[in-house]
Image (cartoon, rainbow, N blue to C red):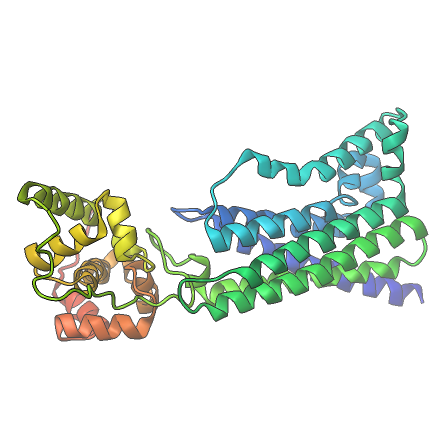
Length: 389
């Protein structure tokens, strides 16, 4: 009986170890990038909490209690973090909000709990109105309340989101993420409660923690399956959101188009200079969700003035102009030996295209050959430079 129990414990430890390793790899994918957005940070923080939860169950409890007791107690309060981090991840993912210090208010329950834990370790009696928070059952009720309230807010935020373009895949992922997150984090809260109350009996409850590595593997699969949805393609620049398609924006104006625009030649020249700078230096075309309105706002001019400059001065539509810049960027990457290990799909997203099919079609129409053929020709004509020591 003991041997069987020991074997099961060993199996659980190995599963959790694989989960922690996968969590570390996922954090590397999300954070080791040239451009990190806030939702990357909050998703990474969410995964980090799961990573800590798994590590605390891999390391010997006896060793933890005698060596780093204060850190081990931290594991009992981690469920307070899942809800706030899930909400911040989803809201920043959907609405591109800016960081505000008041968002730290979400973590007050966790901070209070840690404070009570420190007081308890120092054998100091906490205030009577806070003492009950350290008890097992009130702690479980508060953690479950936090999890349900925050995940309800996440679900409400996802369902109320009205994307400017069809984005069913992203919304579907967030709904599934919310449902699984609520189920698993609630299970972990229950498991921690029973492990604490029943110690040292019924330790098989620890198998509830097996849900954490599987959830981490699922998130990793989604990140790698749809890299554009998480903006984790190799390279620099901004990438498109999953489901967003580059719209064929055209100016719907009769001829003459700009007879009443009032745009002077000097102002038009300034717009052209700003437009060239935004493409060459800032590379705004790397954003696959870039629109005429968005570009005009970046340049600090009116939309119809930008449209007039594109159509009358440059003799190009907005879509043609942006796609030409993207094709030029793709040609630069394809021709460079430094990026020879990049997949064509990665280069497509890197250059600002939202899908491989549209990239192939536009590239071939522009260059007369496919991206793969262009890469082969470029590398064939280049002479390798051999450094001698």
